[in-house]
Picture 1 (cartoon, rainbow, N blue to C red):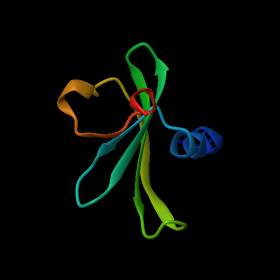
Picture 2: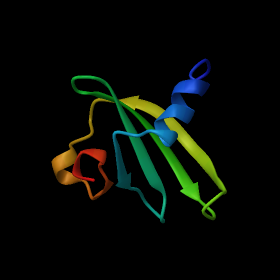
Picture 3: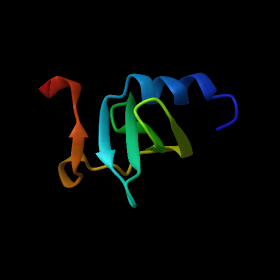
Length: 75
């Protein structure tokens, strides 16, 4: 993900979706193309602190099978 630092941070700051990960991790998703997402796995330590575990591009996300924690369209 070298060279994508701004996109990774943008994905966490303004995600299209946040889904549940393993061990209380969160996965921020940003749609890149019709069926392609940037996924950023991270943990929040407090309301002002956290850390990124990993980031990757994927087309294997099936939102209908995921536990969606946040969706701006439903806010």
